[in-house]
Amino acid sequence: MLINKDMKMADVIHLDHHLLYVINRFNIQLGFEDKSVADVCAEHQVNTSFFLEIVNTYHDPSYFPLKNLKRFSPSLLIDYLQKTHHYYLGIKIPEIEQYINQLTLNNKIEPAHSKLLVDFFQSYKTELTAHISREEQRVYPYVKKLEEFLSLVDDGEVSLHEINEYSIQKYEEEHDDVEAKLYDLKNIIIKYLPSPNDSSLFNKILHDLFELERDLNNHGRFENLILVPIVEKMEKDLVKKLK
Amino acid sequence: MQRLSILIIEQSFIIREGIKTLLSQMNQPFSMEEVDEFVIDLPKLLRKTKPNLVLINPKYIGTDIVLPRTNNSKIIFAAILQGEIEPNIKSKFECCLQIDADKQTLSKQFEEMIEKGAGKKKIQQNSTLSEREISILKLVALGLTNNDIGEKLYISTHTVMTHRKNITRKLGIKTVSGLTVFAILNNIIKAEEYR
Image (tube, rainbow over all chains, first blue to last red; front, side, top):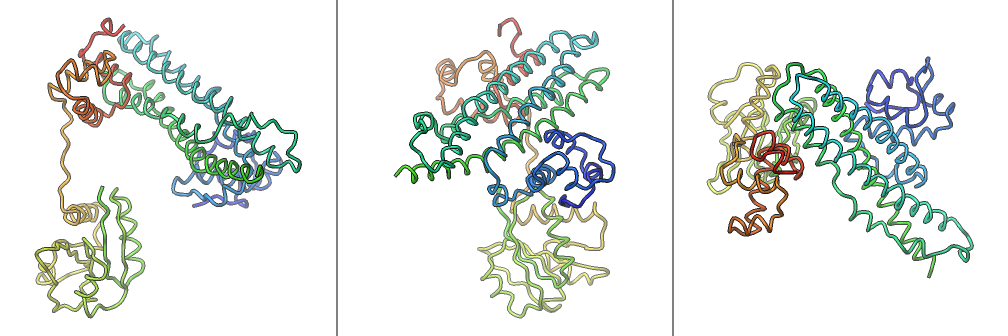
C-alpha cells in the first residue's frame, strides 16, 4: 500500500515504523495528533510530493518512480542525501559503535573476539566516512555548481574550470562498494562468532546493521538511478549551452 | 538464474493472480502468458508461446485431450485442480496444483513444479572449505594479493580467483578483512601473524 498525502501521519508510522528515521530527516518530529501527511509537511515547509516519493520508495522497495523523481530539482535531492549522511555518521554509526564497544566490557565474551569486531567495525566506519566525505566535498558542490550555471541567463561570469575539473562519470567510477563490509559483519556475527551465553547485545547490533543496510540500499538507489542520470543530463545541457 | 517461461490456461482472474503472487514469492524469475478461454489448438498455442512450463485447468482443454509431447522440447505440464479429480486426468500431468490446498501444501507443489520446469534440482550447496581453499584463504587473510598467491602455490591468478569466488560463496564473506576475521576465529591464522 502506498502512502498518500491525505493519510494521517500517525497512521503512516503504524503502517511502517522504519519510516520514523526517514521522517526525522525532514526535521519532522513526533507528536502528530491527527494531522494528515500534507498538513505536517506544510507545517514544516517540506515539499509534500517530494516527501511522499521518498517515504514510498523507502516503504516499498518495488516502488521506484524514476520519472516523478527526476522532476525534482537536484538541490532538493542533494539536501535529502546530505541529511541522510548526517543521520549515518551522526546517529546510526555512533549508536552501533557504542553497542560494539560494550562487547569489550562483557567478561563472558573472549577479549580477542570483541577486539576483532571492534577493529572490523572501525575499518568499516573509516571506509564509509571516506565515501561520504568524497560525496560531500566533491560531488555535491559540483552538482550545485552545474545547477547554478545552467540557471544563469548570462554565462560570461562563471568560472568554468570548476565545472571542467570533475564529471559525474568519475563519481560513478569512485562509487565503491561500502556494502560488502557490512554484509560480512552481519555474517561474522550470525554464523562465525562462538555462540555467546546471552545474545541480546548481538541482537541489538544485528538489528541496527540490518536497518542501516536497508537505509544504505535506498540511499544508493537514489544516487545511482536519479542523481547520476540528472547530472548526466545537466552535463549535456551545459555542453549545448556553451556551443 | 534462468527465467522460466510460463503459459497459464485458466479462466478465473483471481486464480491466475493468486498463482502469480505465489510464484513471485518463490525467488524464481519468470514471464507469464495468460489465456482465459477454451483452447482448441493447444499445439499451435505452444508453438507460439514456447513455454517451459504450462499450467492448465483441464476444463479448458477438454477432458479427453492428449497433451502434445515431443522428445526434443521438454515442456512440463501442470494441472490446476480443484476438489475431487479423476485420477486419469491427474496422471496425464507431471505435477498438480491443488488450489484449495493450504499454503504449506501449495508451496511444496509450487517448488516441485518450478524444479521440474527449470529442469534441475536445487543442489544443496556444500559449505565446507576444501584443503586447497583453506590454504588459499590463509594467504588471503595474511594480506597476499592474487598474484602473490599464484606464484607461491604454482597456480595461475585465474585459478586463485576461482578459488576465492568459491570461498566467498561458501562462507558468505566478501572482503579481505572479513576473511581475515574468519581465519582468526577458526585458527587458520593467528592474530599475531596478521599484525
